[in-house]
Image 1 (cartoon, rainbow, N blue to C red):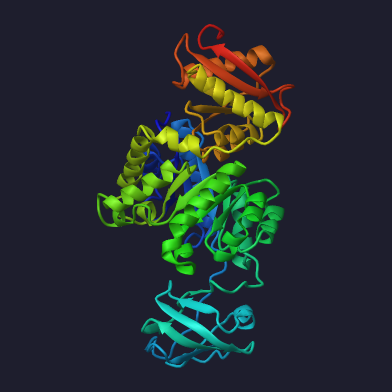
Image 2 (image 1 turned 30 degrees about the vertical axis):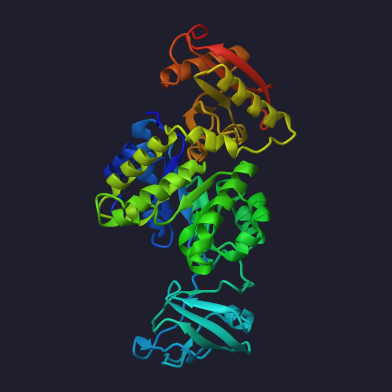
Length: 475
């Protein structure tokens, strides 16, 4: 089954979509990668879901990627004597290290790292910004604040700190346990939440040791400020617009989304746009016009993947949401303006043989109107470079390693096929042409361009281009 679009769809699994039957329906509707949210999934359920996805993969005969999304540090206030308290703008309110139940003037904050890091003038946003506080003074044991906006606070509400750089990493004890579990279950991608600095990625990389690729979720102003360094250390980025829109002005989020998308494309790293893309389809069978426009903007921008969260995890219309996203993306990619917008954002290749080969493959394929670019890739690097060029023709990535094919299923324009390794150059050309024919990327007499590294099975050595006729060189 080949997709008729370049952008990929990432669907979150949840109560509405966790059965094997429903997972198969979501794949058939257009889902390319499945996301398991570890905030709501224990290890036993995670292993069950991975098993069901692999069963669907075997049934459909296509590699399917799995992304495990770690919860990250969840900062929350304590409990109140009356569960909730009314506040007024201008009043003083204190967060402190006293574990007694809260009142209308104070509450316990069980995070000493916040108490020691917040300075006068810093903002504290409670309950996704519904309550806004501004610190007046802090002594390491308590933070005295003024209520700037909002009228109430209740038990266990989340705390966001847009102005404060916390001296804690992105991995909590729960995250470390979850990371060990998802790596043992052989997931393909791991997403890190609330990344603040490049060092936050180092620990996850050290634990993963290449067993899964690491995706940095950009949802804090500190991460936006250090984006180039974070891109350097990550394998992919997610524009997590939910928390980004709490910690930064909402009106800044669209511009930041574009900046992140373009920076990731320049670096040849996949980028996912996430949160509230078809939010109304949690309860309605059709999206709003604004949501359709939002999805289309991400596709026009050249994002590798667009993501559904509660729409597919807990909504009333999970299959319809995936199908709608598929239809929007497919329509955008056939729009007369699409190719021009994608081409205008291309960046110069790096001065390496592999980048030059990928650039040449795209230019030759588009000039000669070839049917496909076929890349042999063991590690996935050649596939990444081919996708970075955003060619108008499809990319078929052939890999003898199933894990590589699954990882590349997130990649823009890339159709992944698990194929036995070629014996020699002739076998490689024969195999590529035969797969192009079998997978519907060419008919007898069509031409394809093949890129690979010679000698074969040498990672990162892409140095060969070959134009071949489908049908005439297959046996």
